[in-house]
Image (cartoon, one colour):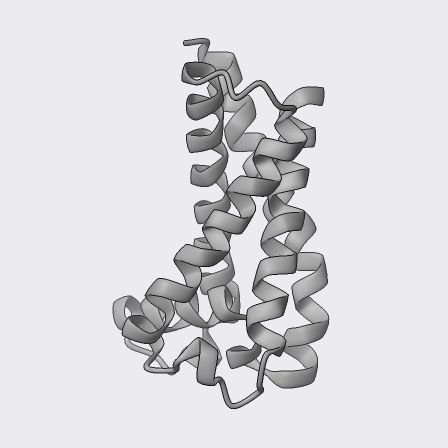
Length: 147
């Protein structure tokens, strides 16, 4: 396994997280913390460490979100190094993004106490999570190719 490829996975993960976050900012501004499921999770988790109101922790929790994206990039680089999926990184990255969105749905209620499929904002947060994670995955695959 090539360490440079793994580091490129980390960098691609950071870039992909930034790309998906650009689309999450308008949701956050319009509907607040609970509208972006993964940000909500990170804010609640961060509040448990820092002992502050989750609403006050946008920046620290965003750094946590960025870390998750970087770690996802490392995991993706390791997986595609070990397993030859016979599809492009763009496609396999997008599939990974959808899997990450599923993980978000599974862990959301235990962390935030909000059921994503019965969300007060309706389907917007769930649809947003799938779309944004697909963008993350596609960007991850793309940037892993070009780095």
